[in-house]
Image (cartoon, rainbow, N blue to C red; front, side, top):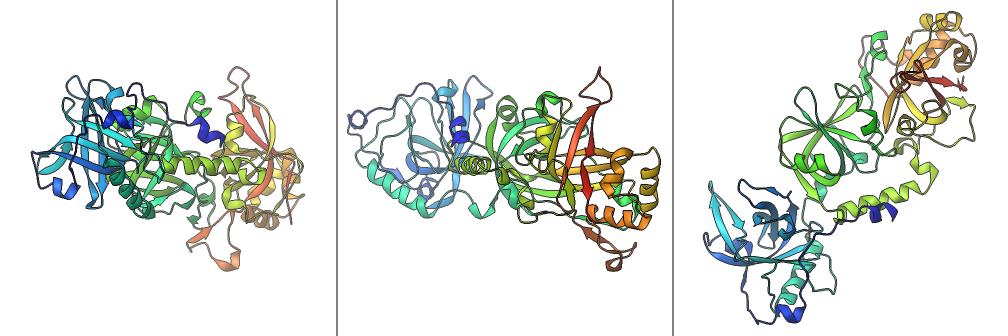
Length: 484
């Protein structure tokens, strides 16, 4: 599990874990209340034993302290309650490894603000201990505050809490999706790695997120007219990512763009480091055949530890995907192998578009598996002049990692189409690439869904300006032929 090992949570400084004997030294007997009962005692100091369902971000308060908010649940209140911690430095705040871990809280205060009850951790008199939530025989906490002392009854309470968590894990798992299972216009939770955050010129915030899987290939709702196939943007952002940022993105798996028109404190953390996070109650739609995530007014962003169970699960899946060449290919193509094209580099390995875009060599050749989402020109009469004149054909290619423009020049055009064909034959071949239904199945005034097939093709990159090799880089199709 190489990726999981690389992603281990950095350790928090301080907070040595005391022995059980030391915690029992005072023989303190704490009376733990359920969350439901504690909410009836506004203003009182209480002790709680609960599971952590949400982990917030640590940030500096308006004063000199640092603050952190967790949400905790128990059998009496599965919707939970928020706990706000204050400390002189971040090392003294709880460092929760995973949602579902258990926390013991002593002498915290039930506080009401703006009609809502929550729990306040007083840095002078309150204390806490964190335990692993998964069922195990280990009863020692992995982090405690300096003033924390346990009691001999804690083990029994911890065992009961762990047993409850087996059947009632925190979070709504039925709403949690991976990118490979996303559906348009539905609300869901997404556990993902936030690779980059930036603010667009329009003022919107854009999160670049990834979970190691491929988002589903889209169908295009269109009409049978030339204009519908000639324009497809390469990205949703107003400007493409700088190369230095692009080269930090993974080459396998989709990087989804999630847009938000509001600022949140989590953005400050996500801008500084690479975090895993849970995006709660977001939605997705398709624009120009590209998936676009959107944060709703009700959406929330929760930071996750690299040891969180959902994170570890996704890293294991990604490691497994990397073990075989075929699983590196687009997930949507695994059971839909295309026989539409023949390629020259039969024995060459598979390369994603992102692997090419981030290749340290400006010029190189490779074989890839893509869909043709648009073409210019795409009508038979124009394509015929391409084979006999000095024009070129521009195709927009996509795989789960990127979109690019690739050109078919005159010298390669004859082989690409399989010879000097009639305008009708050229149109039929182009329609196969674009996933256009047969003419008898639809007319020009009928809205239709086209689903471009996955095709193998050979590409080579080249530059137009030796003084600007990356900015002038282009792609050209070669050694590829559409079958009859």
